[in-house]
Image 1 (cartoon, rainbow, N blue to C red):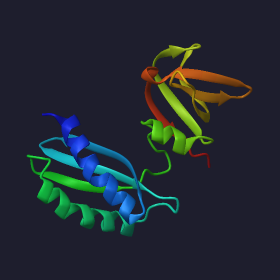
Image 2: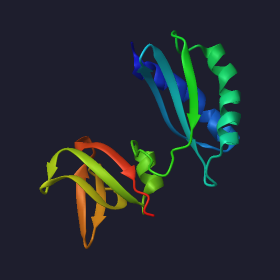
Image 3: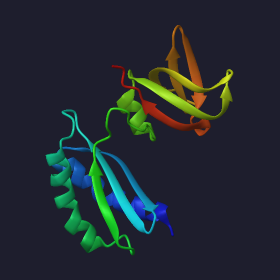
Image 4: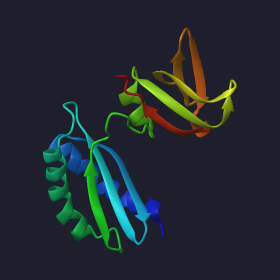
Length: 154
């Protein structure tokens, strides 16, 4: 199965629709759980996302997806908000979350640890993710990061 193809095709449909409805398209995932396929679309906005927003977007994209038919298998459509601890995956996400506290989990230890928490300072020219940890700035190659999320501190 070419899941990357599905995600790309859905992104092309979802992005302009999100813009039109006043949302930011945060993420698109196409995953298999047991026998079922799930198309997960995550939307965001400055004001945050409510259940009503998710329903609005779901109803709006459903007929467009049916018509474009990018997915051959039957699937469940899930529309959600990124939540308090959101995944940061793309340069757009990094720009959007600059100034927020994040946690970066790495594939291999860097400076003795695989988990680094700090304030996201964006990216440098080489494409490293910059984390401010105390007085220091740690530059982490994006390819070294297995998962990066915002951290919600209560």
